[in-house]
Image 1 (tube, one colour):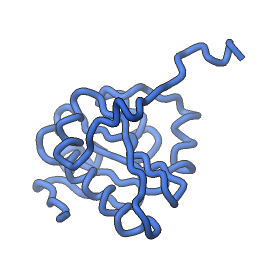
Image 2 (cartoon, helix red, strand yellow):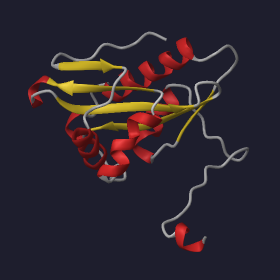
Image 3 (tube, one colour):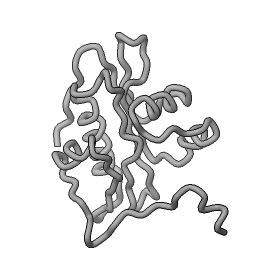
Image 4 (cartoon, one colour):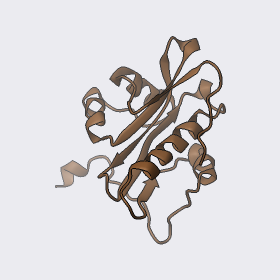
Length: 152
């Protein structure tokens, strides 16, 4: 898999994440669930690898990102794939996803890794183009709803 190049005016940052304020803004502005400051500060500790793209036209602001949450052995979860709406349809998400997958390919131990993600409707075509398929009915993603702590 060759890594696509970015359009002029964008800079790729490999092996790191945007600052906490930029991370929080990028999540919220791109339609992902907003996170608190405390949640965002903990993100780097749980990240196996991350990357992001900045825009020269926006004074070096992060405009796209993605990361991998992993045990480094078998489970690799693509997370926080986000591109600001004004920077979509320029190949930024594809570049980030391909870079994350290449990193897994080159750094995961011998054997077939389990690579997964949760796809919202706008991202499904991108993921399908890069080899992801729906896991149902064999497996179905599940999550706890708000208020679960009160039930314990």
